[in-house]
Image (cartoon, rainbow, N blue to C red; front, side, top):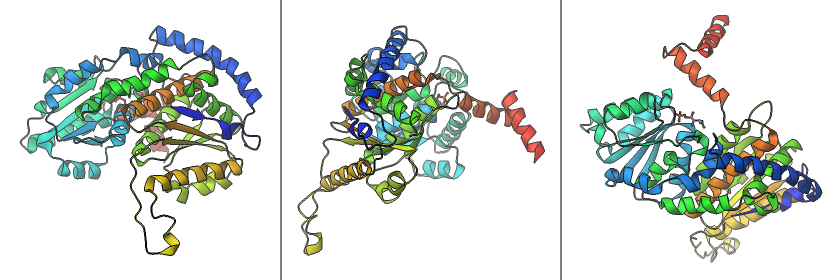
Length: 428
Ligand code: PA5
């Protein structure tokens, strides 16, 4: 993986950062790296996620899902960090086992999805670190009911990944469901490369070891200088541009297969760094599609943004046929991939020419190894940015507030957050 900062360091970039200032920031990166290494070493909460290339047991994951090797489809029931890592991998890589995701509790979408699924040959992969998340548990209750209605023994087709205690763990134990634990110290949005993200990948037959090898490669490249570590280079430039005014970070992959990666990144960045009045707002985009919608704003709107371009250096191309129309002759004989690359380079150059800061992130290919590199590097970038901002990267009090309020409103316990919602209702 390579990170090119040239268009953020250029003299005309505004906001931008000079090479001298980036070198000064590198002294803080060295201090942050020391803190991160100590956290990884001690497997501290959150930092433990960056130890996953050493600690994750891919053989155990493969063995645990072995009973589901006959699956035609896998339906992951989870939300936020318990779904987005698996969804990123599933949407990026081809498999004969179709992956579906139920995160939201929109009744119409749930009903439509369940009507379309081959329930008798679908594995239900239920994932919740806490085992208490209302959306996940509600969706699971609906799914198992639908399976029973279809004459399918849901206990034969359900796999659970959850913590050591909580209602989901109790349910798994009571019905003797095959399950995996969530590793200690790995928050949801940092769990793509753990049991949480990899169980679905294993059911789909992806190469878990190659995913972990990609991550291990980036782990080895963490060092006390951002100039030697792609992950830290990215985390440091985002932080530096944000404090100079780029409060929005538009994630723009040029590969349809990485569209969900932008969604995963948005959660990682927002939930980890949005604290104490700080943090950079992630925007989700897709090249070349969003050149025809958001790009106008990125090039000519407020100077409050940076753009992150992501692309694979290689991809399978598809030839564009020759045509009888003279006006289209420039297309014939090239490939759709050539066109996508031309769009990428033109957009990057156009933003640079307008002095809009942008960063290029490249992986060799969208395969297991490339994805492992990308996911790990972005997580390490986020941890570094958290150290530079001085925020508590690994907590999510705003998310917990909403979860407690919703549970309390539905009568699922005594939560002060629900009282606050009730008080607001009374005022209306
Ligand atoms: O990153 C996080 O902590 C959250 O997005 C959680 O993953 C999400 O709220 C789901 O929580 P749980 O896995 O406990 O069901």
